Structures are given as structure tokens and as C-alpha cells.
Image (cartoon, rainbow, N blue to C red; front, top):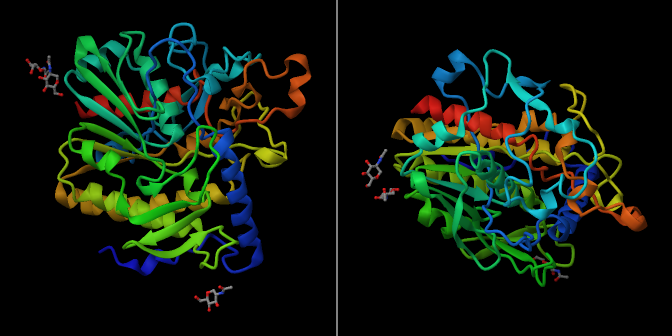
Length: 416
Ligand SMILES: *[C@@H]1O[C@H](CO)[C@@H](O)[C@H](O)[C@H]1NC(C)=O
Ligand SMILES: *[C@@H]1O[C@H](CO)[C@@H](O)[C@H](O)[C@H]1NC(C)=O
Ligand SMILES: *[C@@H]1O[C@H](CO)[C@@H](O)[C@H](O)[C@H]1NC(C)=O
């Protein structure tokens, strides 16, 4: 069932010509840079106890398909205030705290996701928390999962403020509880989902290349996995970084390591292997809860990559078809959808509730939702603006990914 026939992944076009290699290189450089700029240590300089974030995924079940597809729709203008602000919720990470950082336009806050064939109301946080009494959730992945979990906790904060009960040294993995409801939410930082040696310091500067074990899942999530009632798993951009790939403890090759005499395997090779192992693990796990796989989220750099002065200055959602997904995002997405489909029949047979949380297309329509220059505090003060690096990958909070939670809550409440 899990034959390796399809491992020779072919990107939509240009597999064999130089163009593609250039694309791979360009991507490597971009993500390397982001090791510092975007994937570095979360800023925890704010004094309050902070909740974390995380990501999620889902594919509509047969029943949901007949009723409506929550992921098929468009963004409509809406006058409701966002579910929280930086003043009401103290757990927003500085780099995504766009209001506090002085982002001047607010139009991006007044859009709601509207599925084509059904209504999607904002779920009442009290009803949701009531339904989650005694339950545990885990958001598993990279800094976008952290971004998501912060949105999730802030959205619920109108009913009750989460209390932090655990954090690791770097504040990357954290756990909170909602005391009245005995509801526990964790974010588990594992950017590859597989075992990896990551030698980045707090500024994201690597002292040596990443060694990624394609065939070994990261125990940081597989150990607590069994005890989580809901798990939202995702991965993505870290796979584009320079890395040495190992299997059975032996070096197979690498991605973007020109100084080493190793076979360039392409990041798509590693991504497919790891995602396949992750989903195979899930499908065979006899897990009694719900496992959501969140699709990777697109970035929206325009006018160049981040290091070339690329930016994201739009103030409104884009129309369907107006923006094209980058080749890197398309490659990641194609692998995810193929591997999900492959795993979901196995999961069905074994009675595992594996759901696709497919927020990639609806997020593609929100180039206006990133911090951009406002990942920094008042970036244009005192002529600093010239050198500002834009973040067009993570999401402002409050912001468009609050709608991910509208969808998530709706999916979960339907299962109750
Ligand atoms: C939550 O756990 C407590 C203690 O085990 C139990 O008394 C209560 O019935 C549980 N509530 C729900 C909704 O499962
Ligand atoms: C809280 O929920 C856990 C299950 O997640 C249960 O074992 C425990 O008894 C509950 N505690 C209380 C005080 O309800
Ligand atoms: C690179 O590896 C190949 C095959 O393993 C070997 O034949 C070649 O001599 C190596 N080149 C260098 C510069 O080490």
C-alpha cells in the first residue's frame, strides 16, 4: 500500500532543467534567511503569562460534503469587531502583534469567511469550552502552529483566559489550561515532525547543517499523541532549508549543500517521505480522537523575496485567481493532498478519524493579513523604514486566521 513508486515526485513542470534547480536554490536561501527573520526564538519579552498557538488541518467528511464544504467560499466584508484585541488578550507574540506595532490600516480585520453553500457563524466560546470539558488538544508543527494556537486561545479568551501550566526553555512548546472547563491546549514545536538535529541559536543562526532523519518521527509529538483528544498537525517551509537527509542512520543525500559531495535530492523528496510516515503513523494508531492535518499556508511576498526587499502591502483580500501560488507552495501542497488521500482510506478502514483542515486556498486569498513591516514595533519611526524586513508569511493577530477557528469550531461542534 505504501510502495515507494511515487517517491520520484515531479513538480508540475521543469523537473529536469536548470530553472527548477534555480528555484530550489532561491527557496533555500529564502528559508535560511527566515531562520533568523521568522523562525527564530519567539519573543517572550512581554510580562504576562502567554498562551501559545498552533495549526490545524481537515478534509470534509462524506457527510459534510453533502451538506457543505466549509473550505469552498469567499471572503465577505463584515462589520463585526474582531473577537479580541491586543489589549484583551495578552498572549499575542510581538512579531504578529500588528495593532500594537502600529499597523495603520484596519480594513483587513473586517472580513469573514463565507462558505459558498452554507452559513458559518462565529462559534460562541462558552459553548465551545463547555463541549471541550475534560478534553485535551495539541497543535503540532512550526511557528505557524504557534501563530494558530495564539488565535485559538485569544478567541476563547472572551469566555475564559487560559492559564499557562508549562513551557519549555525556549517557549516553543507550551501548555495551557482553561481551569473552569478542565480543558488543556498544547502547542508542540517540531518543525519537521521527524527527528532532526537543529543547531540554531536564539537568533536562528545555524552552527551546522540540519540532519533530518526521514524515517524517524519526532518523539516530542508521538509520545503525547495518544493522550490528546484532538491533534492538529502541520509542516511546511522548514523543509526548504539546507539539510542532510538520513535514513536508517545512513546519509542518503541532501538539499542545497553545494559544499558537500552529496546527491541533491530536493526538498520535495524529504517532505513526501516525512508526511507519508506521519500520516501512516496516524492511520495505524488506533487513536480514538480526531486528527486534523492542516495544509501548509502560502506566503505573499511581492516584488522579490524577503531579502530582496519583497513586501506585502495590500490592504484587502484578493479575488480568486488574482494571485498565483508560488512554485514552492504548489509543490508542498500537491504532496500533502496526495499523501492525505493515500492515508485517509487506510485511516477509514481502521476507524481513525483523520480529517483534512484545508486552509491553504482560503489563506491564499489574504495577502493583506500578514504583519509585513509591522512585525517590528513602529517600523517607520526615525527613518528606520528603509531597512525593514517584511514578514509576509506569518499572520497578524487578530487577523484572517481567526477564521480558521470559526471553521475548526464548526467542524468540531458538528461531531458532538
Ligand atoms: C470531567 O471529569 C470529571 C472528573 O473525572 C467528571 O466528574 C465529569 O463527569 C467529567 N465531565 C465530562 C463532561 O466528561
Ligand atoms: C480533567 O480531565 C481529565 C481528562 O483529560 C480527567 O482525567 C480528570 O479527572 C479531570 N479532572 C477534573 C478535576 O475534572
Ligand atoms: C564525490 O563522490 C563520488 C562518489 O561517491 C566520488 O567518486 C568522488 O571522487 C567524490 N568527489 C570528491 C571531490 O570527493
